[in-house]
Amino acid sequence: TQTVSQSDAHVTVFEGDSVELRCNYSYGGSIYLSWYIQHHGRGLQFLLKYYSGNPVVQGVNGFEAEFSKSDSSFHLRKASVHWSDSAVYFCAASPNNYAQGLTFGLGTRVSVFP
Amino acid sequence: DMKVTQMPRYLIKRMGENVLLECGQDMSHETMYWYRQDPGLGLQLIYISYDVDSNSEGDIPKGYRVSRKKREHFSLILDSAKTNQTSVYFCASSYSNERLFFGHGTKLSVL
Image (cartoon, rainbow over all chains, first blue to last red; front, side):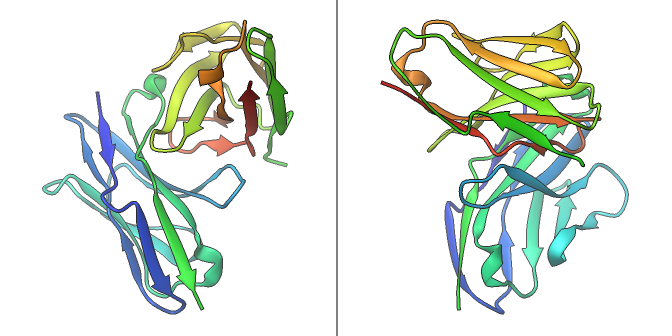
């Protein structure tokens, strides 16, 4: 069984700041990793994913994430946040066998102030 | 149009009543999911459906059942709802496990 940990429950930043959201996973085999964003009152929306290849993956709206096998991590970054980036961000993992669905972390709430 | 539609958006039921949550998708995705989202617990997987009449329990299936008679529709049924089933329920679909498309959610309150 895989687990996903997001160490920060809430992050506060100012517009134009950079932000990094941490995600660590535990799983012994091949794994898909992804990030989703949830704006208030809405469903989750896909940001980016990693399975293999270049450990730095680019997503929508300037987000990128870096996979590290040695650290069992998949941290999400953005160089310059906008007020519209205020949302809850979820890291998710799934094994190579898609029959088990996605396991989500508890989420990190990002508040962006002007 | 790449959309997952959930109905209703809000629902209030009394304990013991039956509840039907509906979900539709227009992408012909084979796999569909039901999750519930609770504060402090994140998203928990209730059921997965791999295609019509091919359903599998997720992590928390107790108290729920599902129905999938058409590829584009996936229903979640609560027979005799309980107060601890008050939650926000999300339906999702995917072509593979790499990316899920989520609906806007149904906020269910069981009184």
